[in-house]
Picture: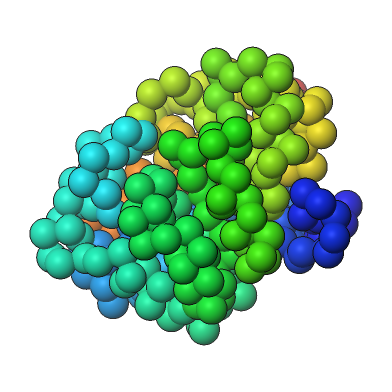
Amino acid sequence: MSETNFSNDASEAIVSKSAAAVERARKAGRKALIAYLPASFPDKQTSIDAAIALARNGADIIEIGIPYSDPVMDGSVIQAATTQALENGFHVADVFDVVAAITAETDAAVLVMTYWNPVMRMGVDEFSRRLAEAGGAGLITPDLVPDEAAEWMSASDKYGLDRVFLVAPSSTPERVAMTVKATRGFVYAVSIMGVTGARTEVSSAAEAVVAAAHAAGAERACVGLGVSKASHVREIAAYADGVIVGTALVAALRDGGVPAVAALAKELSTGFDLPTAETVSA
């Protein structure tokens, strides 16, 4: 598969950093590990150090979340972390410093995950320009749908940024097709209807969501929500192109600091080496 995607008008080729990261993992014989942490939790420098540790311990793509006062997708662990970051004085502009520091030290693709209001407040073009200048790969936008994203589509093409949209178990075939067409990088396949949070089992709906995205033409579909251990990684890697981990890493950072984040990332990455059920039965 090509690492280059095309803008909607096909006027110029745009190299997708997150697609390239997924393809590098594929060429190495595994799926991509995508890791989330909030910016400036528990403080700005520690969030940078933790993200760098992720990249050095198996993460192919880093998601940096913008702390937000009224999240609709985040569970209690991430909500508490982002509330702390806001109380410590986080400003949206700080995310560009965090992204620049990570990209200066690692080869990981760095995406920003954000609700849309902070982007609109700064200005879509201004935000996109500053993200590109910081070396960011693009945006994951959980509350922005493609049919309401004309300004972002234009800015992402202008600055060569990835736009990662979400599909869910409730998405109709028409909605999945629209999302796949609008996405650059990878499609974010939400495995459950609900908020983020580590769970003991991966939702049985995840595989069907990924299959629907692939059937609609997605070259890369990655699964998030509920992943917390290596066995989850192995289970999802059997059908998805990447595995997204968030809450478990935020909890590790909260409880054990950067060393705990590094250790968990390393442990999660071993999931790609675990035997499948078919291998065990054989």
